[in-house]
Length: 219
Image (cartoon, rainbow, N blue to C red; front, side, top):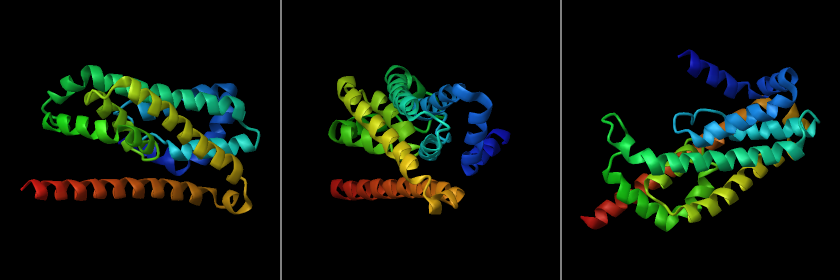
């Protein structure tokens, strides 16, 4: 419960927390950001870590010369790439063993469906998933479980990771210091989180609707 409370506080006050971390740890902040982004994208047990909002705030701090964008952006792109890569290989190597656990929420009968999904929409899924919290954590894992070709996954992993980091970091860099944004920074963070969750809900609703229609056709 304490961990969940800490994460919620980090999400709600990420602007203040990140500024404090920069002031406290100096250049080590790049390693801290690397670890957070790597874990958020690379560990299926860490989908609650901040992603979009963290990148946006980091970009805003770079615009204020508190972070070096020439170090920040490559560091975060590498973290995003390695995170998805690790997640893919976790799913590829031990995903089936995880499915054997009685408490696992992913069932074996979903494997064939997942493999078919990634074979048909794999590239688009890996890229779009970058902009969806929770989804971006589970997508590479399921790609590995579904045995998606790594050469295929790799290209979309690179493109998706770079686009995701550049979009939010540069968004924070160029827009984070606008008076209306700077004066309502906490509201902007809330808005980013809310939009991300809305996108997830829309995706889930669309997927469930498509699946229901597919089942009706089969009947």
